[in-house]
Length: 137
View 1 (tube, rainbow, N blue to C red):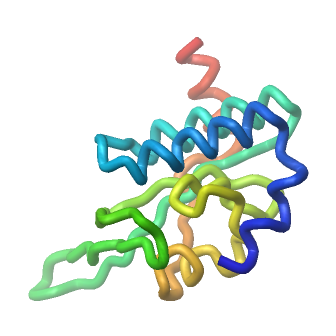
View 2 (cartoon, rainbow, N blue to C red; view 1 turned 90 degrees about the horizontal axis):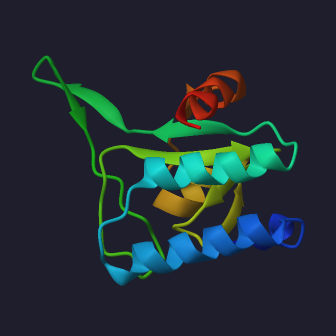
View 3 (tube, one colour; view 1 turned 180 degrees about the vertical axis):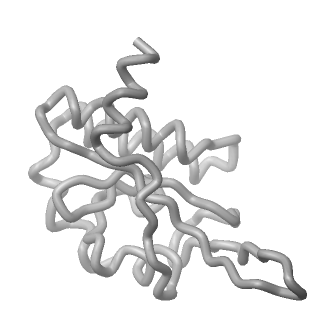
C-alpha cells in the first residue's frame, strides 16, 4: 500500500505500538473488533491533542427492495476475513488502519485497503467521540 508509510514516522510510540499490536491480532485469526480498536486509537490520539473521528465503511445496494451489505475483503494482506461493515479511526487526513498495519491516506483509503472505491461515512464526529469516551471513563 503506497500511502501507509507517509505518516508512520509522525505517530507517537503509544499510537504506533497499539496500531502494530492490533495489526498482529487481526492477522492471527483470533476474534478482533474493529470498532473497539478504532475507539482505543481515537482515545490515544485525543490524549495527544488530536481531534480524531471514526469512519464507517459499507458497500450497500438495494436488492429485491432490501438493503444488501456486500462483503468487504481486505486486499494484499494476510487477513483471511470479510466484514459487511468496518470502522476505522481517522485523523489529519489519514485512517489509522490495523488491516494495513499503518496509517493510510483517506483520499485513497478504500481503494488501497479493499480494492474498490467506497465512500467513507462519518460514524462518530470528534465531538461525539469525545463525549462517548468521557462517559466511559
